[in-house]
Amino acid sequence: MKYIFVIITIFAFSCKNKNENIKAGSICTIEAGDGKFGAIKVLDIDGNMAHVKIYKNQFDTRPSKIDISTLSVGTIEDTDGFGIGHVPLDIDQFNKWKPIVIGYEAVEKSELEGYEIWKNK
Image (tube, rainbow, N blue to C red):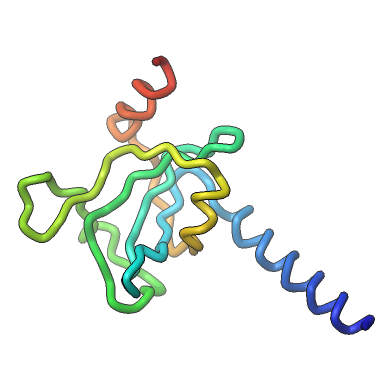
């Protein structure tokens, strides 16, 4: 019984530490559904909300690194799909995507336009 408690404690601690590394500017891979993986950029974490940019890029396996310059939001007219510049998510919903940090890029002021509109409504 003691060993089960130790294993659960270690597992919970390691999961908690993964999310503590997520901050504004984090580039993360996520579970996108249908066995695919996607990429997001964290724009802000505001209390119990995560604000993210969702890139249109999809991957068959979870990448451990991505050339950030290849990521694109695209447009709704793209035949291969599109991303979204700002999505507010409850932190629990965000965590269900199982984000893993694979890089960092400072958040540009222009990326916060949708967030500022959402925040000031």
